[in-house]
Length: 260
Image 1 (cartoon, one colour):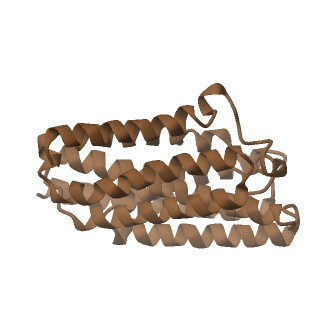
Image 2: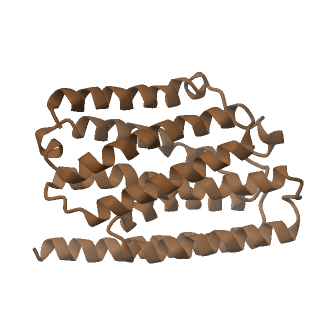
Image 3: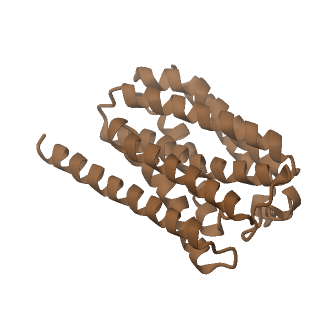
């Protein structure tokens, strides 16, 4: 890809990110709590995401912007994987903005579909990156972190939004069975992420992105009025499992790097 085309591509990505950041009302202080019959409020369900769990989104948008700049460099322009990633990254940017726009307009069902599509594209990108050989250390950090962290973070966010959508359909989110099933699904999802931590090249980043959200959900469930002993206990176990797997995988990776 020529330098001019790479720059134009970066500008398109910046435009999409600007749409997501400034076009959804986030920078104006607009929040999603009143939407979906109030079921996105902090105390609505046991899977509600506290503000601390949502904050990484801004960093993730910065990561995508950094990747858009990186793909303009000579090193990235001559790496095959970036040529294959470019259309998918554009799709990520568009779906990300649409997802937030639909949430702002109280369209929880369509927004969930959009979020699932976004997650699927991110997983595809992670697989492509995991199968590629990135010889440049800066490329490894920027490319893997930009998409791996986003995938892990979004995976838990999508799960929380799915729980909200089920509540919108009329199920009582405060019933013990609802909380128990939600806790079970969260635990299964975290076990899958634990396996991915060791089996996938992007697993460490995906784990870290998910761990951040699960940790803050756990803290919020223990201390906030929607506290559920059952859910808090399961969420604590899920958090510890993710943390142990992340630490173990990092130690293995560091030992491998030290022995090179």
